[in-house]
Length: 343
Image (cartoon, rainbow, N blue to C red):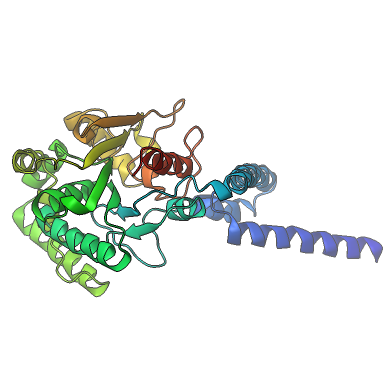
């Protein structure tokens, strides 16, 4: 009876732990959850995978504990409390959903360290100039409602192009203190131009129609898939650069990361990486390093060891703790740098 009771108690403790891990771990991911469930029925293999799960969760707990302790120490200093609020501008094919944050765990970390954060809220896909007008309206709204005078824009991917258009062509230069672009294709993507030329027009129109219809259902008033993609090509970006001049008084800076191997980018970036490398060179799965350089200061994020930092990693899209690159701390330092320089 005592042995049976011990077995029952052990089973309760074990399954309680497994359920909590499955429900709360961020780093375990879908892949490990599925594989662990499958391996659980195979003797010895299940023990091997259990040890793997324990290691992943232990590392996650240690990492998150260190971050919590760091934030506790600097809580009162407000290292990210910039003079002007931060405006986070998303890239193409995404929206600022209320419960699914494009920027992952980054905004909460910034706010925890004193930052005031707003979002661009432009459509998921539209021509750069149209997105720029949407952003301009959003910036004016923030300035009018808060009296903050200006904003510091942090923009990812196409969002950087949209932001430059808002500043240069939509009259927002007086309301923008700084623009920091993250992995933005300022000089376009050669591979995008190649793919557009290879895909038959009928297929392009069908894909665009399906995308536009879907995004209208989730809030985009007038999505335009083809206009967004076309504006990311090399020819479109180079032509637009000729007429989209940097505004005096606005500080322009840029950041870029890259992958070393295709597998460093999660699907579909692992598939696009070799194509982009063939046409554009060193890249993050979508954008080349050379295309991302813009402004007075350029920061290249060098991956540690064999790991790369993909187009999605740099905005914490997958909520992954990457060894050698703490994405949340990177943005904390970025905001702290803006504060230190009086922005």
